[in-house]
Amino acid sequence: MAATAAGDRRAFDELYLRHHRSVFGLIYRMTGRHEVAEELVNDVMLVVWQKACTFAGRSRVSTWIMGVAYNKALKAIRQLSRRPTLVEVEPQMAVDPEGPETDLSRRERRERIREAMTGLSAEHRAAIELTYYHGYSYREIALIVGCPENTVKTRMFNARRRLRSLLSQPSEEPTEQRGKSWSR
Amino acid sequence: MKKSHERVAELLPWMVNATLDNSEDAEVREHVSDCVTCRDHLELLAELYAAVQEGPSAEVDSFEALDTMRLRLEHDGAAESGRARPRPPSRLVRWVLFAQAAALVFALGLIFFQRANPQLPPTSFRTLADTSPATAATDPQARVLFSEGATERQIRELLHQIGGRIVDGPSEMGLYTVELETDAGDSATVVNRVEALRHDTNVRFVELVSRGSLSPSGG
Image (cartoon, rainbow over all chains, first blue to last red; front, side, top):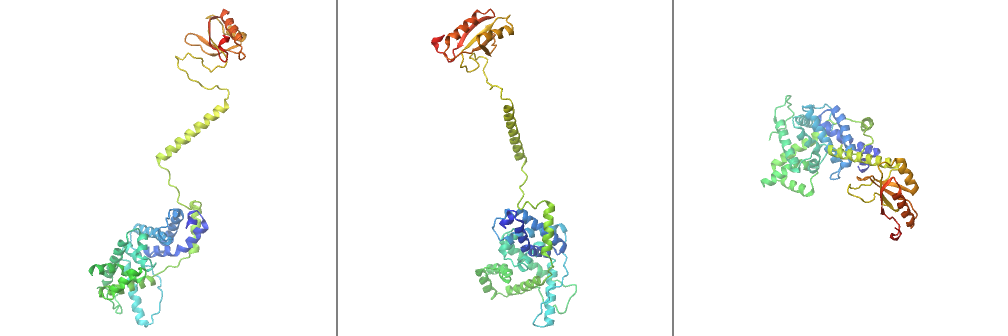
C-alpha cells in the first residue's frame, strides 16, 4: 500500500489483482447488475490509486477498499432508483447427503431467501452481504460503512426482522415442499 | 436477563460467521443453550448464510479488468499521480502566490536594470534646509556664487583652471558647491585656488566650506 501511495504502478497492479474480486463481488451483490459492477469496480480502484496516500492504517487495507466500494455501490443504487434485479445465475449445486428430496427443499428455501433479500434496503442488504459473503466482523463492517458498531448490530437485527417478514408473506408460486415457516 | 438477550440477539449474525471474539462467543453460546427464541433466530441466520454463500457469483476476469484499468489511467492522465492530487489553492492563496511572484519579478528586474546601468550614481536624499555639502568629500569644497552674466563656457574654463568641478547646486541663493581637486596635505594649493576664484570677475562670492583631508593649519 505504501508503494502504491508512492506512485508505484506495479504495486498498484498487485493490489488491484488482490482485491478486484472482493470489490466486484460486493458491488455486484449490492446492485445485482453485472455491467454496473464492472464499471464501478474500476471507479473504486481509481480512488484507491489516487487516495492511497490518505490511507492512515487505522484498519486493514481490504476494509478501507471495501469502504470505498460500499459507498460507490450505495451511490449507484440511489442513482438507479430501483432495487437490484435478481441475477439469474446457476447456484452452486451442493449435493445434500440426506437425499435429493431434502436437497431440493433446501435449495428452494434458500432461493426464496435470496429473492426476499431484494426487498431489503441497500444498507440492510449490504450488512448481510458483508457478513455472510465476505465474512466480516461487525467491527470491520462499521469501518467499511462508516458508522458506529451498535448501528451495524441494529441494522443487521432490523434486516433479519424485515427478511422474516418478507418470508412470511405468501409466495407467488407456492410449493408444497417449502414446508418451512419463517413467520415466528 | 432481558438486556442480555437483546445484546446476544444482536451478536447472533456474527456467531454464525465465526467472527466474534472469544468472550462474546462464549456469552452467546451460553445464552443460546437456554433461549428458544435465539435458537430460532440462529436457524434463520444459518439458512441466510447458506443462501448468500450459494447465491449467484458472477465470473469476472481480474486480469482483463486490470488491462482496462491501465488504459483508463493512461487516458485520464492519472498514471503519474499515484497519490491524491493536491487540491487547487484557495482564492486567497492564489492571490498571495501571485503577489509574491510579482514582487520577485520586480526585484529581478531592478537587479537587471542596475547591472545594465552601472554608471548611475547612488541616490542620496537631502532636505531643502540642509546646507551641508552634497557629497562626502575627501577633497576640499568651496561654495561659489557666479556672476549673473557668466556664461557656461566661462564657468567651465574657470573650473578647469583651478581644477575644480561642481558637485552640487545651485541652491536657492544660486550657490554652487565646487570640489577642488588637490593632493592630500597640499593646503597651499587650495588657498591659492580659492583666491583665484575670488579674483575672477565671473565670481561674486566664494568661501571654503570643507577642508577635506587637509590639515586645519593649511587654510
